[in-house]
Length: 119
Length: 111
Image 1 (cartoon, rainbow over the protein chains, first blue to last red):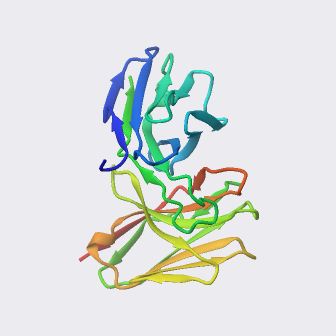
Image 2: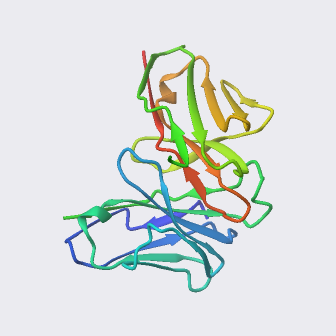
């Protein structure tokens, strides 16, 4: 296990189509996060899973977005009826569930991201 | 007001220069603080954590002022390889787990 893996690396889709991204976290990490990053901005939090439970969702996660982590391992992020404003880099990160708060390292590891272009 | 605000940049400096980045955060309940580095079209990677007492890692020094809600990163003796975007990152509070990122400050070191 060499890190957080995301697929696909790039996705070009037509407006109105549905897309699904996959994230495979580091195997011993309980926590999984999805972020979105647009050009010139820092990553923006979308949602968070602890094992299979989705515990936190950002206001950015509209009804067209859904994320799952059915067995507490890999996760998928689906965007329905894509819009041009959805074009961004979608980043997945994972972290262990050990003393995270106040832990100086926090142990976040990001994947390389999926770059979505909606045309 | 944004949760985490950083110097707009870009910073263009020659090799060997010392450069400082500043960051402010709005949530006084914030618990933990970090600097991440992001290379062009790559994912963010943890550069260093920021402790209340200040901490140093080689050429990099991070400082935190909780009273002013201010974080800084100092890079001494800049190298070409330091060219990247530096993201100021805050863990809001113990009720949440998500890291909140600033927009980032771009550094370009030239020879």
